[in-house]
Image (tube, rainbow, N blue to C red; front, top):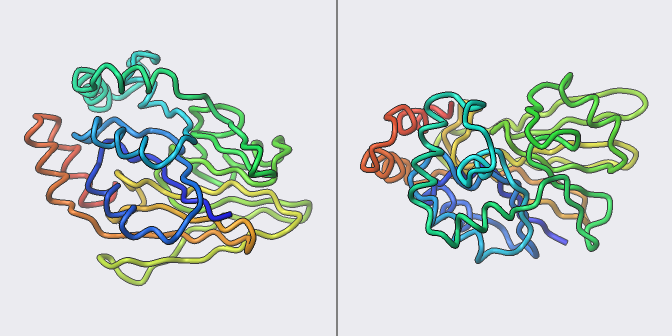
Length: 251
């Protein structure tokens, strides 16, 4: 089965559309959370996401925008964006966000895999470094975990011999590119497809991934998108300017 993995769209419909246009053939779409927050197109992103499939995990911004999380846990800009998003969401979408399932979730047709936003141990945990990943990798009985939250594309792995961290390397800064990453037997993995709508690894391009469960290969993808359009929407919505400017730097 071929899984299209999307995470951290953050109301950036321009980036989402670019990812969907570039995505290889796939059988199912998995959304790892944070569909809203920061960007200016929350309803559009939710409506597109609903049309892609039914497998979702809630993110912290999904909780915040739908009133399920204390905004004191957010920085001021993120909090303002969450409140703005809450005001913009139509009632149907607001209720849908509130009902999103907490990770980790497992799918009967996808054995040996689980899907989370932060980590298998804590849905809001940031797994940024290999040190962060060691405990969830060792504790989890599921060999392959797909996660988001950090906006950093790549993976962590461990077995009885060694542990490793992987970040895709790309050759350009403005073209579509892919990097393949094999999944090996006897190794536990945490794989992050990266952020569709707000990458934070210094690369402004939208990020996503494809996993072929038969070939056991993760394909990390980066695609350019209508950055100016996304920035203009944010400015027109009177959201904090920082939310627009940071898109160009991938931070």
